Image (cartoon, rainbow, N blue to C red; front, side, top):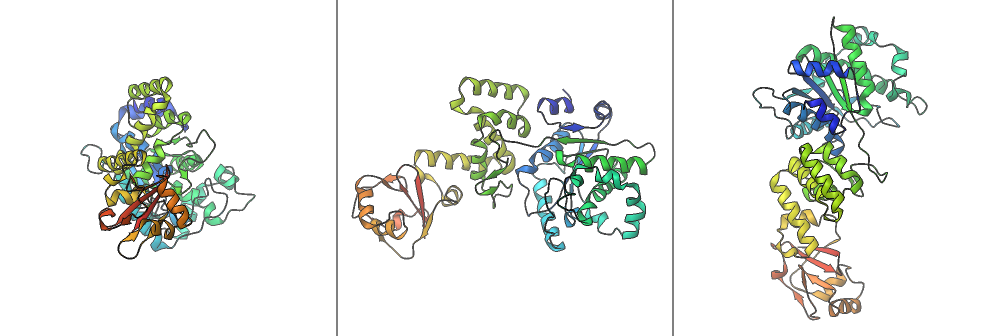
Length: 418
């Protein structure tokens, strides 16, 4: 099975230009292809995963991916998929974001591979030195106004308004494709479905600028959720690839909680499991959905891919500890991950009566209620039920001297910090 057949099986081709021509090209030579990532934050998030993994799949199939960091276009703002103008960041901020994104991309693409190493590029290298006369005469003259107005990224913004700055984005992205074609021989651009207009505009610029040139475009579908909510978003916000912004445990939990209606699609989209493995997981899901075999496989594959095997083991350990209540087995570092969003209270001082701690930390609303909770067996200290009304918490109740975990009832956790 060739790379395009694999992408078709996985449902990863949304649009493409000249499918047969591209298939023929891929069979004859090592093709250089690129995808751009604009540095709008200091981390990529899982909304970027599909195009990143498309580059990875092509590299595994023997082709040469170019990861383009938009240090130049990131200063302008892409109107694609946006309802309003984006707040522009300072040059120094975009440069910092660009460096962070470069580092993240190296986790997914092999830049040291002998036969077909991935290439990293930053379009600020050619856009940053571009003077306005050259931009207008040599590039801008190739774009008809009617042609640009007809593109979805522009047409969808005409009523709400679009600045000349964002209107020019298509031209700059097209210039990227031309520059990479001329510099590296890059013949294929891939991107999200909202990039179709920009991709085809770049192909047109190459056709007009280079005699007998042939370039191709391919987009991946928009990732949707069966329940209608936005993919990659939770109550806490976006699911980031940076472990400081979204912990490996939170990342793992996002995938393990995938809806049954979405899980097989996500296995095809995001994992490198074989067709046979995915088909077997589909069978297991139909026969025993309560075992959530597909969700476990998805969460394990994605967490290992993004954060590594050790982080995956930690995420599973935290999940099992929270499910069983055996939280005393966790390290302080694991507690920071698993209890990042639970209510917390900082205790200043030495030993404290449990009843006083429950009231001070607002776990119980009053001493009367605290006594009642303890007597009824509703209070757990580090996973152990306690019914001693005169219980005093000492240094021995502190995990690595930093935390005590209080549970009230079946699922209400509270973190005491020292």
